[in-house]
Length: 243
Ligand SMILES: [Zn+2]
Image 1 (spheres, rainbow, N blue to C red):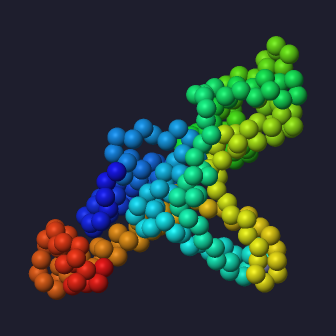
Image 2 (image 1 turned 90 degrees about the vertical axis):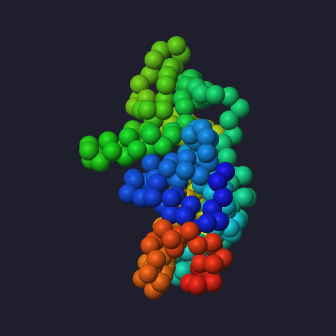
Image 3 (image 1 turned 120 degrees about the horizontal axis):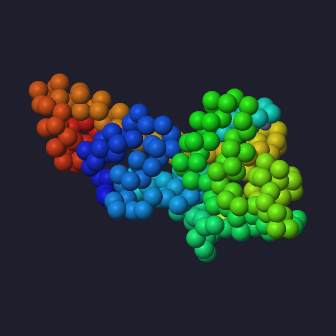
């Protein structure tokens, strides 16, 4: 993995991801940071790697805020990137297709990846009335039978769909991330979702924009080019502009 102890590398990372839609942006951050790594197999694996990247760039501790849905009090909470990444890593013993037997149905499926999310989101937007979860299942259920007869995905009974969704979550627990919180004011309990890629991107963007502002100030003050400013050692640059 590349080290990000210099500002030029941070700006390179920022440039790789800038202007990309969310899923592609997360993949761009990872491929720019983990040289030669295979693409993440699942959404949970991608989230786990993004957490590891956060630890490398900004430290292991993350501080987060959420608002109580009942009284809007701000709840502050924190997490450890290493511990969270360990929980997010997929539990895959075998390559897909995975198999589920429930209520006489036999289902072969694979886990959603970032391409599935992108395509399902686009189709949901175009059609308007298509359900996102259903669109994902259309893509990820590979075969489905009941007593030897093929069953269309959209005709699966609700309890079988629930069992399938639970099985997917067990295999890829980090696909969606949320924190269980209790309001310090009114004791309401809620789940605060965390978009790991969005959180990391906001930090990369803010750090890169701070650097660019400082580079601009230094370049104007000393009559240097931006490239000359970026070539300053991190220690020298910090001494001048308190990075
Ligand atoms: Zn509350």
